[in-house]
Length: 101
Length: 216
Image (cartoon, rainbow over all chains, first blue to last red; front, top):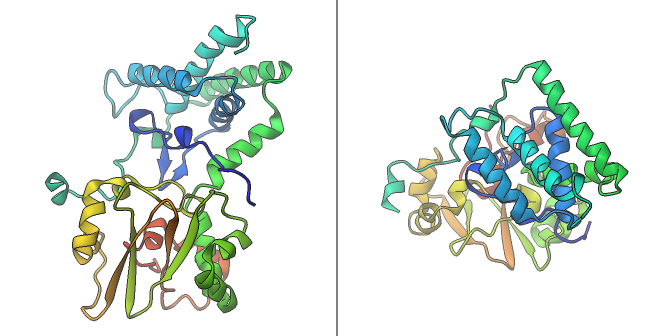
């Protein structure tokens, strides 16, 4: 297996409150849909269909909103914020507009 | 760094996202939203089901410390493999299907009753991802990076690892070119375990060298 680097560090190594939830390096997914939502966003980013920085910005805002009350007890799960960000970006970029960029 | 001395974090604080208390209905609604996006994007040819599966596999499985544990367990049960691993770690690790970072050479250092190895990256946070996944927060901390060189035994003690005075401690500084992996000692009392069972025992910290593998 001598392919190029496996995962994008700007995605895999995001830091701070919006870092991918991991335990000892292992990703934490509670449900299959979380895994799918993760994969869709990363796949779009890896193909250049979605600007990761833009998605990340959206995610930061989404998570900040969820953590407004109490950062230790966010109003929704990480991947719920992730999904909300993905939907928002797709509404802007792909689904409601004709432009795909 | 002084603020870390009394309260050295050995891992990131527990994330609130490590637990989930959603109802089945809520989950179902969320799953439907994701399925809707997925089918729309598939229809537009923007995502591919197979590619999605492969991608999750990469981020989820290829990056964890599990790969390193498999390397260590193989070395424990197969003396020839261990020989190859200590001779040319990059090639021996690739035998198990792990690797892929460019310009990176792996070096495996073996713990013995006389020698204990610890890995650090004093400059930044060079780390052997293909075998260990992402580095823990403390590995990137200035506290660990500087102190492990000056006082490795003190740092080991903070991790609950005490060594006899006659054990030599070697600290290995990773770089962009060379990344180290510690081959921990196989604990006594594991003679009856098979390779898969051994894998379960081997954790990330033992392969960085801050802990020993324990039979627990």
